[in-house]
Image 1 (tube, rainbow, N blue to C red):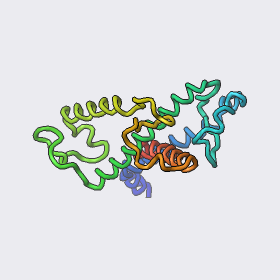
Image 2: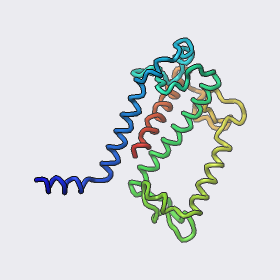
Image 3: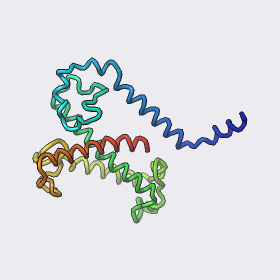
Image 4: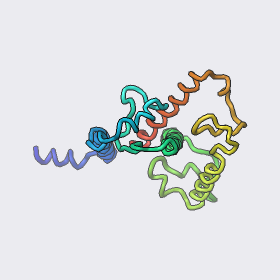
Length: 199
């Protein structure tokens, strides 16, 4: 019986071990919400942010790390901008992960002599992508950093990068619908950040 249990232990799937580790880390992180340091935050200082977009049931105002303790409105806006950016990147990352895991690849080569079909999915792609491919991706990221911002100063809210060029019917929505759609994007981004960490 001991021999069988040892064999079963040896055969444990590494993916299961990784998932268990990720779940355990998530549980540890969520335990920080009950840490006494979060309780010390001055309620009057935090009330300024309790009605902001993203404060939703069931958590309500949730700042376990105390990042908004005595924070200025400028600090809040900066954190919201970073949260939106990371959420948008994570949503693209989750979709990209699922598409490549399904076997879908771009046509052509990522670099001369290396077709996209030769690149595996998941973390295995990191070592398989040639340096020319990494150069293209890094260059594209820098390009996005230059254009994905409120260049014209016409943005209605943090993260509005339309710059008077792209609308997709946004101006036809009433204020309630706009707030709802912004909340959906924020929550989907939060979920995607957790999702890509788990993947």
